[in-house]
Image 1: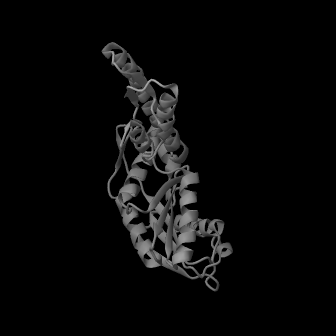
Image 2 (image 1 turned 180 degrees about the vertical axis):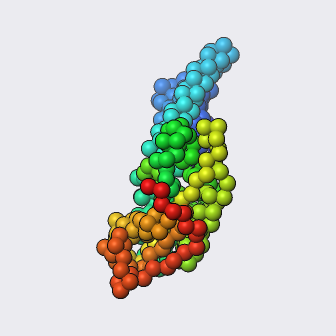
Image 3 (image 1 turned 120 degrees about the vertical axis):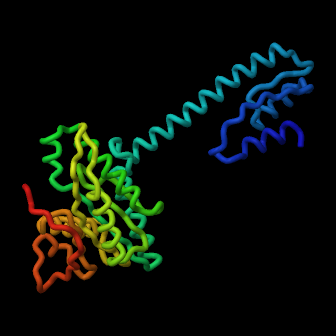
Length: 275
């Protein structure tokens, strides 16, 4: 291929490839030929015979362009990350984890597969802030997020839902599997103290579990059901997992009755409420 064809091939590469600055060195002096080269993707051109000083000057200008392009790419990546991630924990922010849940609900319905949803809340987090300060509280949230992230699969979703709450989305997990994994995460968080403000802080979490099967519930109803299970975990002593079966109506969660609600009591070490 000639130089013009080479330019076209380079410009047809994927958008994720590094930008290549092309200086065309040609013996053709006709303006139409030079325009054709620029239209094919050349950034600059030199006409033979070649002057090495002029070539060096053109290459220096090209290096500035390439450096600027790389800076713009980095800035774009930073902005994309900032728009989708929580600045404190580095996890997905509320908007992104809810969007992930929405997509997975559609996928679960299409593929007729279960989808596990876990809503997590740090127990007595206000006491951490009051006793050790907000910097320590931030350190606790970061470590909880880190431990939750380390305890899930690469294709699971983990995000900070708000305040001291986290939302986990577990594709392909039925109620039994979701409960088991939720309790493993509970143990992972409470298993060892968290270093914060030069102190060791004992932290536990409560978890509310539900499973979406097909299109039985909307996104909001699914989140309400998980929130209701979390409410019950808090009411029963914290540091535990509570699950809502798919037959439970969302309206019955906050004030369950034996006649209308089917619940699964899950392992966990109850802890007396402290406020």
